[in-house]
Image 1 (cartoon, rainbow, N blue to C red):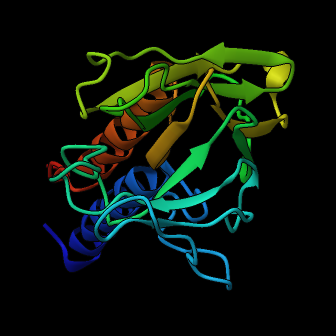
Image 2 (cartoon, rainbow, N blue to C red):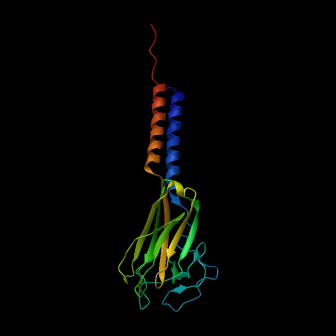
Image 3 (cartoon, rainbow, N blue to C red):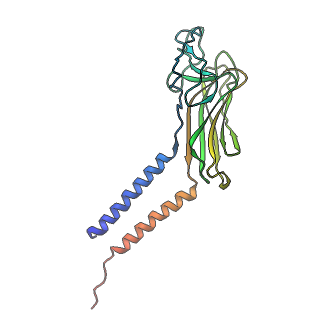
Length: 223
């Protein structure tokens, strides 16, 4: 194999790895303040909800609506709300209004968008609310479940594959309040290209490899 062909093959391999890495990174859509650890500048001035527990009644940075930020404190004693917190020490709470965030990315036809959010099932009250994914005129309500009053959290999921009509449409995350206080944490949104896109990309790499292999075949000497 000549140095030139080796260089071409090496370049193709590096390009393939770079594209694969980019595709993997592109699967995660940025959600601002996804675990609600960024709180309003006024802090959490309200106590009286138990040892180590505090909350505010203020906007949650990067989210519209809702009531505020909540740090439930340790899961022991008379004020035990949850058995644990999924991520960090702060959650967002709503007494019915719910939260929303429209992400910077817009819909791509054929991509499947998956939203996951942890919902808390408080020990002292029921009805944790729900979630939804909104793309263009489509609202997809999520599903999930945990025992009422268990103090556990359930990862709710909403998924939708964008159509050609959805191309360029805004993508909005909805955290829907229930009949009583709802608590949310650990919001994630991903996008997965349709299978045919990956197949075309892999076929393209296969064609490049075949072309390079044919270039390095020895030419028979003419008698």
